[in-house]
Length: 107
Length: 125
Image 1 (spheres, chains in turn green, blue):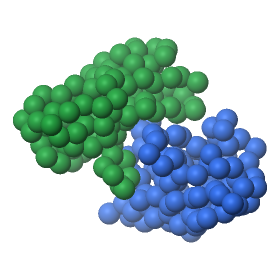
Image 2 (spheres, helix red, strand yellow; image 1 turned 90 degrees about the vertical axis):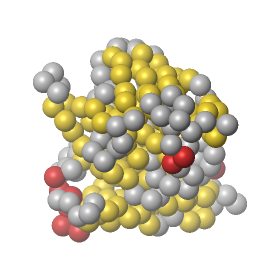
Image 3 (cartoon, chains in turn yellow, cyan; image 1 turned 90 degrees about the horizontal axis):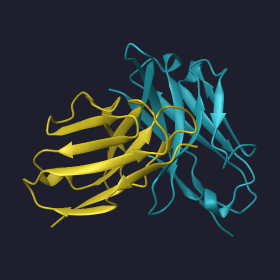
């Protein structure tokens, strides 16, 4: 199985801050990497697919980059609705695996 | 509007069985691959199972292989997960998720573009 490791596990930030979350794959996965946002009690929401492609309807303050084993999700200017948990997921092959999550909290 | 609505969750004793359903609307269900993903209380996301659009190709996480069975009824726009020999560690919210693909010139990228709201399965005596 391909292990996905996110850092940090939690993060405190303020509205307007620029935030970066990192995801590392246990083996090279090209750009087969997706990012999801999840709020408490809700289903995950797709933000980014193929490492850098913004899903339709997702604000442009979200961006993704990386290939191979190292990937990043960046939020350029945090908004109140962005405080949530974020997960990376590899789609290189089954079993599809997720990172352990990053909880983004208000400072 | 794409909608996925899960049902069938509940409290079941260890060793028991349960069948989850996911009813879809707003898209051509028979054209899409589908998945089940679960989330234990306070934990992260875990992929459980995949089924191709026709139902001929199926895959499972090792943690459920031999105990869970995924199926679909394209005529009824429905996805199912039959869960047998349930264990305490199967306690989770179970989500169905639509699998979308995108050809990037080298290969197909896959991602879960729509999710249901989830149904809670609790395995406890």
